[in-house]
Length: 454
Image 1 (cartoon, rainbow, N blue to C red):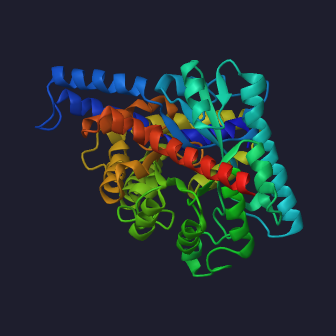
Image 2 (image 1 turned 180 degrees about the vertical axis):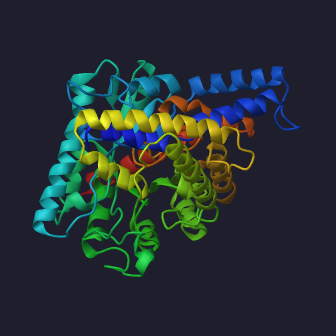
């Protein structure tokens, strides 16, 4: 994807920001709700939350990457317009970003496996290039929880590596050890579409399944992940596969970017049966800031209303908005030259800004999904399975982001909402990183024991 189209993705993803900030400013000017704190107590709350945010280690377990953003000419030392990079991490106080080696599901053939493996290696290499060649003075690669704490103490940002989709393993379970040696510290066995290892949650759409849970090779891979210290990730596989993985694993597991299905009806979320099994396993669910997972109903209502306003403004400004939504827009842009793309985006952003201003003045505009909705899920999960089994993730640069936490520069807003709801500094630290790092320690201890006993 070229840089102009990538910027278009970001612009579209964040079109609610101007509207929301204006609405929040209006609320503050009017005094907010009747039980809002006074200006003095609000200032105290902000200062208290800021202190907590600076002292705890903030860790986001899911940030997608493009290898094109890890070159000498274009890399994370500058703000690329994406959601996670070093300037945005610094601005928002995000300490640790799990950078994702993601490969989309393709054909279960030798050629498909070979291509997936090559894509995965390119992303592994890109992350190592950032931490070892491009910006080793600013960010380091962590393989253990001790590495995380050491790098943060040195004043550096931290990269960790997660693997989304076991498809690149191919038919060779020995690649699990290779991926661990390349720095991978968690892996899901499927993404959107059934892999050779596991069924995907997407089978719920049509009732078509490939394995009925895990394949025999998938079960073998679970053993290898336990052996080499890679956390098993339940985000994306099917419910049946997830329950089987928790039964088979000798170590705690994680869901790197999922939410509670009771609050958000989506096959990507975990229902109470899975959540209770996760707690019994000793694992952790990293609550994801993904609008359509948190509140699909609220997200649909907002999108429908906002698209109507954008279409009206586009017509008034004589901007030819492609029919068919965002995908149609991106297809149209791909057929343009670079200069034409840039001109198109300038016009689109002007339309977007005007639409945001109009929405901010609308009394009947539905609310967008926000940080408050994210913390509603955290509250629910804490109540159901216990705070020690809950964490936080964004899925930035992969579709994630909510109003108030649209990129890494807004990370403090999550801490602020947690503090506003009464979470203590110790609890905030557990949610942001303590629980996840505890699982990593336990997984690596199990691996050491397995290796020692052969």
